[in-house]
Structure formats: C-alpha cells, structure tokens
Figure (tube, rainbow, N blue to C red):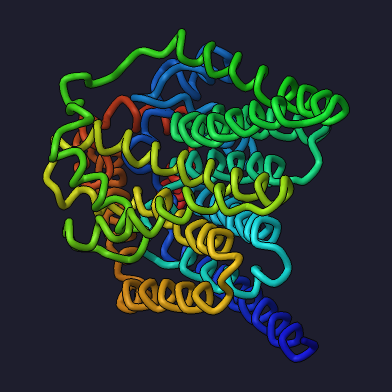
Length: 444
C-alpha cells in the first residue's frame, strides 16, 4: 500500500511539473510571436462608441455579435489607460489567465477524482498546453474564453464540495456571474452545470433529513436563484445575430459538425465522423455512468459537478455547430474552438475514474488507453507553425497601417480587418494607441 501511495505521489508531482513547465514554455512562445497591432474584432474597440467615448456602461454590456464581452472590454480599457493598449502585453496577460484556468482545472480534477484518482487524471492536463489553441492565445480579444471557462470551473469546484452551505452557494453565484460577463459560452457552460446540479439538489431535498434539507435550500438559494435571475436578464435583452446562418439542431450537417468539434479536443484535426463519434461517446458514457455509480452523497456531488461541466461544454460546442455548420466542414477544426473541446479531455478522464470506481483494474486500463489515444492525437501538434502564421498576418497588417499613416493609402488591410480601416486607424492615432506610437518612433 505504501509503495502504491508513493507511486501516486510521484505521478502527481510529475504531472504538475510537466504542466507547469509547458505553461512557462508556451507563455514564452506566445510573447515571442506577439505583434503590437490590433487584429480583426479588436479594431472595433476604436469605433466611436467604444474607447473614443470612454468607459460607459452601455458600451460594456452592448452585444458584440452573439456575445457580451464585459470583462474583455474592461481589460482593453484598463490596458489603454496603462500603456496605450500594447497588444504584446495583452496577449501575455491573457495567457496568464489561461494558466489560471489550467490550474483551476487541475484543482477540480484533484477534488473530483480524489487523492488516488489525481495520479491517474492529472497526466491529462499537459494536453491543455498544446499549440492547437494558438488563435485564442495570439489574439488578445479572445480572453473571453479564458474568463468564461475559469468562472465555470470554479463554480464546478464549489458544486463538487461535500458540504452544502451558504458560502459555497455564493461562490457558485459569483463564478457564474464572472462567466456570463465574459461571453455567451460562459452562460451556456454554466447553464449545463447548473441544470445538472439542480436535478441533483432536488433529489437531495426529497431524500435528506430536515437539517440536510435546510442546508440544501440555503445552497440552492444562494447558487441557483441569482444565477437564474442573471441568465434571464441576459436572455431578455439578447438580440439574435445572423439568424439566417442557423441550422436545424437535428440536421445531419449540424451533428457531423458537432462530432468534429468534440474530436478536435482529442487532437483530431481532420474531419471524420468515424473519429468524432467515438470521441463523443468517450465523454458522454462515463459522465452518465459516474452519477449512477456514486456510492455516497459526497461521491455523487463530485460526479454531478463533472457531468454538469461536461454537459455545459458539449452544449457550448453544439451551439457553435448550430451557428457555424452552414460553413465548410473543415471550419470545425478552427483553432479558436479547440479550447472548449480540449477541456473535455481531463473531465472525461475524471468521469471514467468515477464511473469505474468499483473495478480498479478495468479503470487503469481504460484511463491508460484514453491517455494513449490522446497522445497519438496530439503527437504532431507541438510546433509553432500556427503562431508563425498568426505573426505573419499581423506583421503584414502593421506594414499596411504604417503605409496608411505615411501616404494615406491603402484604406484596407485584409490581413487584419475585413473592411475599410481608415476610420479605425484615425481613431487609434487620436487615442495614441501603443502601435501608433511605435510606428511614429520608427518613422523618426
């Protein structure tokens, strides 16, 4: 028994060390390839109603496509006040937030799988440091993903706690508010988590004694009621965008796109239903089994939190499929969707560990097989090619901006923006954005 405990501690220490080292190396790569120039949606921060108008509540909560990006806008406003919004600083900060997300996932894995389970499940964390997610890391605007999922994971940690009390309920409510303020994906993921948790809490109310019912009601009241009120307020003021692109949720095109999105999280970068369906089953089956297999209330709370996070992430990916399946199937492998799908990998490991609690030999075999499958899927995805492409686009956009400031042409820079960039470039110059100061210094 002592040898087994020692091996478990070594595995946990190795997984934590590998994850920390990969996080540091990835941060250095992100900073090395970063370019101080806005990219795509970031240019909208120079719209007359955005940064030029100052910090206003109407701007913070206004929709940007399907999202409300309160935290991202606050971050951009603060960085502009600090240093003119240096995009190199922005993407560096974003990756620090992503590192916090990875750490939060590790904390959830340790709590949901237990001390012994952590040794088997934490080795899945390094897959979250794959460069497949280069788009979200190279693009400051994409901080929305990190904030949203950080809030959802922290909420899940509170749901997984064995105690049901007011403080844990407040943590859930605050974390959900953080996720909703980040982007629509945060609302969807937290919605899945809380829907599963609500069913579980209802069952606890029916089965528990008077003291347990009171504790459950305090927890549910603090966690679910404020979250539901915020979600209803969000929904009441939401305006659907590009409805003409939405596909029927039951169409084969949407289902195939959805399976391809899920498979991307396992490192599968080619469209293939034969790969997508097994990946989906590898996530859904253990989540369903784990809740039923839980031997006691504490274990059931952990299984419910795991299943809820998985349900929320799958719902977010399905929403992407409904809105994007009209595009070519290959777009399901876009780097910006990887992060949502990749979070399913360590959660699937935890779910398998929970589901097979009574069959340790089978559990070891399943988890080893799942890890090897992920290792094969990610084997050729550890290069900086994606970051080099992102840098090349931005360098060309910087040249285009420099040309505009020098001679007044061109007014379109397709590498970094989809339309006429002249109004945004003029506003950036007026606001003394960091990249305009750098161009002026180079011209001198």
